[in-house]
Amino acid sequence: MCSTSILIVFLITVNSVSLADIISNVSSSASDTDCSANNKFKCKKTGRCIAINWRCDGDDSDCGYGDQSDEQNCTGKTCPSGEFKCKSGQCILIKWKCDGEKDCYDGTDELECNDNPT
Image (tube, rainbow, N blue to C red):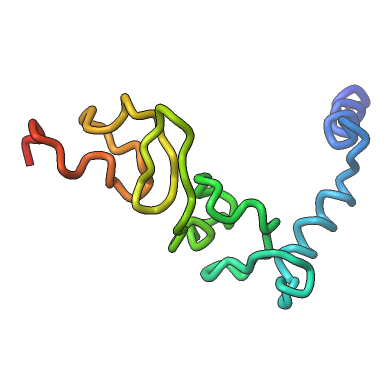
């Protein structure tokens, strides 16, 4: 029983991050109602405040719980050479376009494909 408790404490304090720090960060980002004052983006569904540089980064899990509002209406973003830009702004490898699998969160990589059976 004692070794289990030690293991739990070890896992919680890995990399000098305590459980209290984790809970504090989650609750402050979830309850922060004025994201713009803190130079953050406010997610539409969850109301969560995320770092502004996470906006239009191609990762749809930043807002959490199915809220992809930080990846919507991303204009002007360019993808690196060898990558395809999805309508959502997400970048994927060009070889994944028209490969029969939806790699873009919005599925736009499988649109306008000549040999697409649909």
